[in-house]
Amino acid sequence: MTEDSYFIVPETNIGAYYTWGCTPRLVRMVGASKAMEIIMTCAPISSQEAYRLNLANKVVPKGALMDATHEFVAKMSSKSPTCIRITKKLASGASLKGFGNMFIC
Image (cartoon, rainbow, N blue to C red; front, side, top):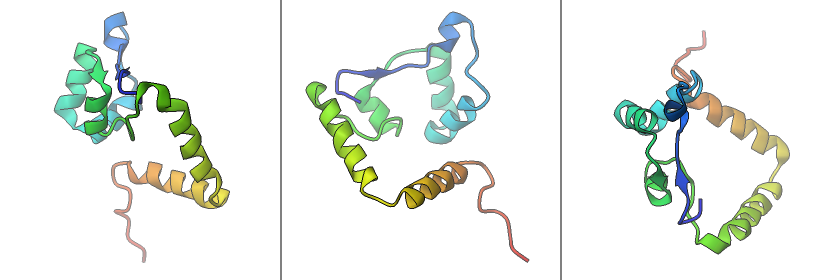
């Protein structure tokens, strides 16, 4: 995110509910109380607060977003595509409730 951008969940303002997939993910990221506040108030969250809440990975100066994006993409594209794909799947799965709680007989 750039330092002058913000994060917002606008659904409640327009009479829609935050989806079944997004709500649990947001709860896991920021906790139930903060997730409810974000969803029910629709208040903009500054980039610094979004970073603090782990909703953003990085905050850069206003004019530096494209450079930061190109740098990130260059780092990822220099790695094994298979490793990147599997890591994405594992990380996404690991964020689900119950992941890793299975035992092997």
